[in-house]
Figure 1 (cartoon, rainbow, N blue to C red):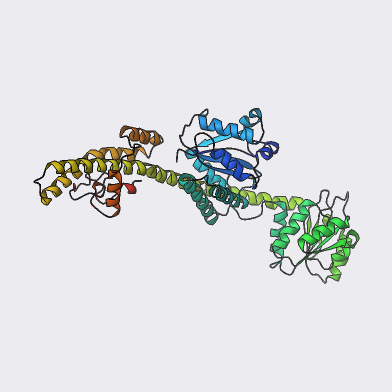
Figure 2 (figure 1 turned 180 degrees about the horizontal axis):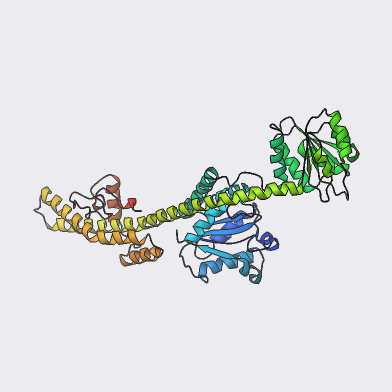
Amino acid sequence: MNNVIVMGVSYKTAPVEVRERLAVSQRSLADALEGLRGLPGSDEVAFLSTCNRVEVVARPAVMDDRADNPFIAEVRGFLSRHHEISREVLDPVLYVHAGRDAVRHLFRVASSLDSMVLGEPQVLGQFKNAFEAAMEAGTTGPVLNRLFQKAIQVAKRVRTETRIAENAVSVSYAAVELAKQIFDDLGQKEVLLIGAGEMGELAARHLVAAGAKRVLVASRTIERAAGLADELGGRAISFEEFPGALREADIAISCTDAPRTIIHAETVQRIMRERKGRPIFFIDIAVPRDIDADVGDLENVYLYNIDDLQAVVDQNLDNRRMEAERAEAIVAQEADAFLDRSRGLSAVPTITALSEKAEAVRRAELEKTFARLNGIDEKGRQAVDALTQAIVRKILHPAIVAIKAEAGVSEGEAFIAAARRLFNLDENFPPHRHKAGREREAGGPSFERGGSVGDSSGEGSPTGSQSSAPGGAG
């Protein structure tokens, strides 16, 4: 898997004004993928675009770790042209991961370890969408398919074995968690939203998603209140009506831009008598505060302001960071195992090609020899056939052992490429290759399966075992 690169920008390297220029919409994604696939040296590509990162994942036809390698230069040029952004702006913020670093980076991205909000659940869905889009466009292949599938598996393992995605890490969702602590079941609870600020709206949306029965929206702009209430499946009321609505509300979220408090202890005390002590949960997200701090001293009244909610968020973030250490260990373990397996698999085509070519040559020479030996009987033919199989096995064994061993090191691909050139494995050699392949598929004799004559030590098999075919390498 040393032949994989990830190039891109993220919130860590580029401001939003650069990221938004590089972003690719769902409608234009196919064109971007096709453009990347058409670059010289491109083999497999995928494109991940979110609000916090834009990344190209690619398998070049030829891997070169140098920063100035031709394919990386091609991708830089494409991003600059396609998004109409100068290289002077792009190059300083663009990062490149290759080989092991690329694999580990993708596993971390899918597992939300590289997200702005640690453990956020949305990134895995975006990761899956990027993979599916590339498959639909036909720009992935066996290498990126395996890599993306494994990254998704690793992300699921991280979520299963750690608590990195648990607990609120936004102020609006922290309000929901606190509400759940006060009310066991939100299903029959009524929410009053006072003001239509963004954070209050988010909190109301979260409460509705958590099962809140009904939402009342009070705003000085009744049109704004009506539009939001319609989206939330609730009802709009005038701003002047909100004190009366407190008599029935179970949860009140206040987020106005008033210069001073609008809900006072005396008002709430009177309302609580009318409510016969039924608990009410106030969430004050406004700055300056909308609700008098003394309200929180009243019996059966629970008041949390934005600092209280932020303290909950900070504690939850600390918990997530602790879980992130466990998640990082999982990612490292999975990346190492995946790379080891991939290196072994990278040797299989070369071992198979070497074995097939040697078998084709052996059979061709055997046929010519039998044609000259008119008097040889079937028993003699079998003996010669077994002899030649054993000879080929003995000759190939050291080469195949070396190929398998070198596939497990960082320079393995260069070694395998040299082996292919040395044995001229990229040259076509029909028809014997196909004949040997048909016999092998049919279970016929082949030195790859150990043949009829073998060395009990296992050295006679090119894969190091009498029972192993080259396809089992790795």
